[in-house]
Image (cartoon, rainbow over all chains, first blue to last red; front, side, top):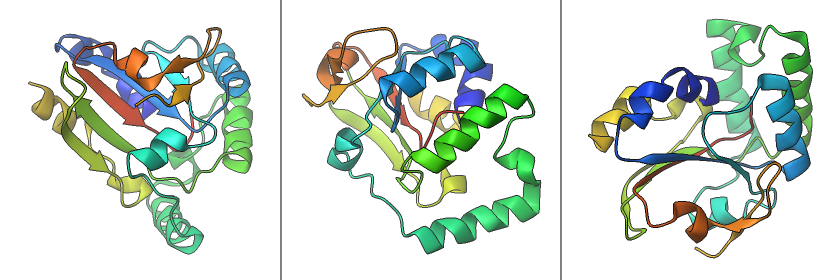
Length: 140
Length: 33
């Protein structure tokens, strides 16, 4: 998802929305991410205790369900589905897979100027995320 | 909305301050990368 957001930076910044990223990482990991992948074009935040995730209704999924979905994705797309080809990036992503709560649900939210939610999608599986096209449709 | 978030190379910030009264797309990911 982060790669797709980076690739479609110009389309996203052409909307009237700012784009914020929340990860279950701590500051130290995000600084390594910045050094390894290059500066991210949108502000990226860490919520290592997943307090905001849970407040917004994102839950930690059953490990068995996530592994089943991951297995399906692996069969469909191979290991490149999960891991970048660059060796340093691959090491960092592998570290994230080992150290992060990767069972937490991802999702996309739109807020208006008053901080009210106007649209959201909480992923029911890793491959169930809203596409950039679907998000742009809601933003425009 | 006063949950504190960490940001690389910056001080902590609350989610409300991150929204900053602007229309916002907030994407929650399972891990960076």
